Length: 209
Image (cartoon, rainbow, N blue to C red; front, top):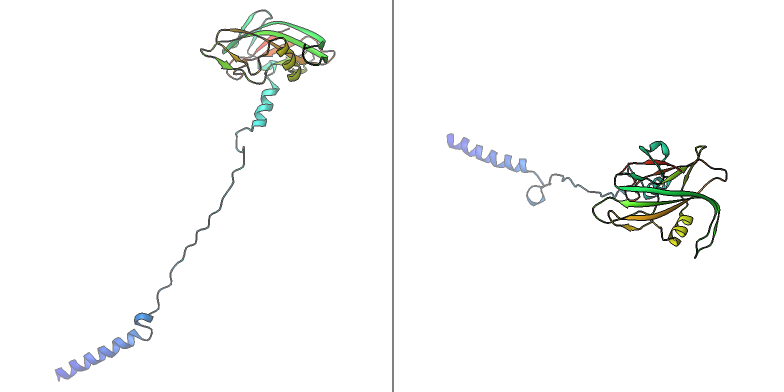
């Protein structure tokens, strides 16, 4: 009896296994679905000159605008050395004229104030001056003028007094000249000066002309 029951159990177990396996078992057995991940790359172009970094044109405009007399930290006199920190500047004289005649360039007509000065770099090695003269001239009515690049460049080169893009040696006085175009009736001028090599590094001074 026990042998019969054991045999029946084995047979039932065999058929139970076949039923559980069912069709599609073995090589044709269905596989679990697979997850496919696709990666998409997107190129993002950052805006040029964004954030708080000023553009080259903005920096150039700010430099050309110069500094006003209200921003000066000291007063200096014509004929006396004015210590600006990185350098000293001595304004020699100022002259108002209606005609400027370089020997090799076309004469300029208008209303000009010509300022002659000496510039002495106080560093320990040579340095190059910039392409701008960041000084301003203010008249008695509060009108503020920046220098006339073309007239200054022509006349200063003619007089061998150019400071634009010049290399200067430490402790050596360099003669300079700057020309301002002003209103016909302008008078009572104040010149505001800063260092020519590093305008933002030193002091600014007012010189009554």
